[in-house]
Amino acid sequence: MSYYGKVFRNLAASAAVFYLLVNAGTALAADKNSDEKTYLGDVYQNMMEVKSLHYEAQLDVSVPIGKFQGVMIGDAQEQPLCYQHDLKLLYCDEKKAEHKFSAKQYIEENEGVLTSYLQTNDKWIKQTMPLTKAMHQKMSRQEQEAALKSMLGMIKNVSLEKETPAYKYMEVTLDAVKISDAVEAAVKQEDKKQPAEVERGFAIGRLAVLAAGDIKYQVKIDKASQTIRELNMDLTEPIRKGADLFVTAGSPKDRQQLQTFLAQSTLMLQVKYSNYNAVANIVIPQQVKDQAVEAKTNELPGKEALTAAKA
Image (cartoon, rainbow, N blue to C red; front, side):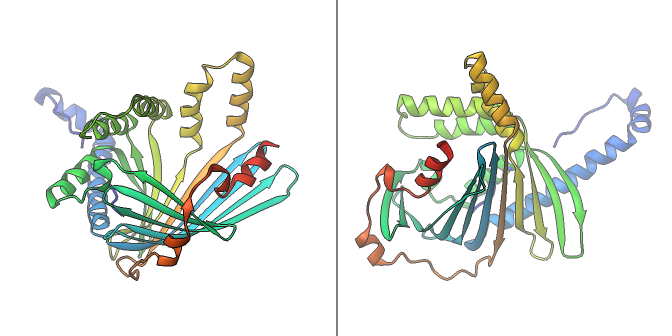
């Protein structure tokens, strides 16, 4: 439930007056950005104190072969780490035919292992995934402060887009280079060496982040509590740039087709938050755990949507 992220220049005394006169607007903007980044830091600090919340996430993807929409509505708690939500997937193909799927999911963490229980077609499917040390260990106050400082260090720019009596709307720009470096640092923190394929995956991920460039997102902040109530992110351009890194490795014909596909595609994410520290304790029913069976690929929800999209 945690959310993680100034540049100053020294001028020669002989040029100070001229600099201030010519660049007064720039200097004021830098000071303002510093103030807004400090404000956002206070917001993130408050978010790190959140122990539970309600969320509503929506992902909209538009591609030449149709439109996908994924909606996730549920609750989350930190101790013990647990989620419960309802999932709805909708795919509208080129002929406007709709394919709908829904599922319910519980997720819990226990001793470094993340376990998911997913209900689809009246069956509960179980999946497990080991977490890295950085993802499952409880952070001390000092580690939280270090994480917050690290997160703020990834922020290149913060700007106030709009303000009302109740809310502030801010745009945040993340530095792609620093995000990539943070991924590498997280991998190096692990006690044991990762398998070669995992290390290759991280390396490719770092390259994709660098290719995607700086990432922007917008947040709606409740002024009274200084907490984030809504996050919006247009991932269209970062996805296009990141994917282009791999597209260029293909044949000229495939490259042109993929570039055309990407140029006609969009990806938007919106997440709304509420009920901070007011969510009832989440308990996964024992019946769910007893009925759950280990997952098989063809049992996962959305397979029909992917099949329809490929047809």
